[in-house]
Image 1 (cartoon, rainbow, N blue to C red):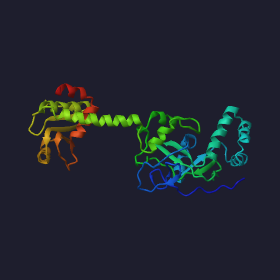
Image 2: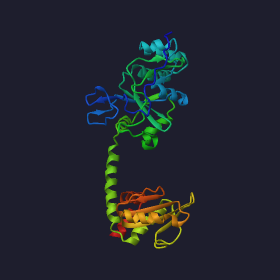
Image 3: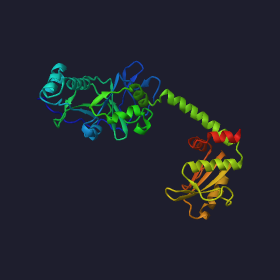
Image 4: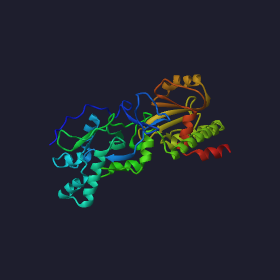
Length: 348
């Protein structure tokens, strides 16, 4: 039986994104990327195929694979019979081995195909897996598979270890990925082809789908239009808009809107936590306005926060209790609250 080799030293971690990543240029040549280089037109991740792999039953190999920058593979591939068959690429006899072990022909063929893809990969396949909420990815080094020191399966080294950020440094987490991809986390087998391969490569390269890019552009245009409409509102209507934004966000007004006190336009409470806040609404403002309200904040008693909201001018606060909501932020909140139609009716 072949001698088992010790596990490789740490190749990298999912947090060390740009250390020794495998990249391909526009001609398909393998290149390496430095630690602070961004994505260019000529440099991006490319792959001949994309495969999902589960790192052990119920993910039991995940910590080790992350630590050592490897992919472990089972299917009895470390046995005295099967390891030589895999190394010699004798896939016909490997299939027979699975059948002798009790697998039906279809299952034996599938097991052989999965094993063959893993052993024959020359580094052109992009391997992905989900570990917790993270999408991890990497390319195998061209060196052949080695026996795992535990005797349970084999392993191959990843170039640069497992990565879980895109080429812009953004984390790849389930909540920000398409359900067509994240459904693979529930896959019951060992490995499979990814039917949304182009989407995976595009996301790793830090690129959004064309539909998303168009939506982002449209959203930015919408924010500009909403901001322009907000500036057409009179003081009363602008104050009503702010109240609607907060009420839809879960805050509840405690007293009548506006002019209840000199330095208070809205008296709010968050029912889920009991937190109280005051809101000061200004159409146009500057630093001196905010400073005056900050100086009087402690005179209001048991309020934990103050929101200072305006649609024109600039204001910044160094007080952690004071949250300044400026034009762009308020425009986004109004869109999220579904108040575009309300605004259109008010300024038409």
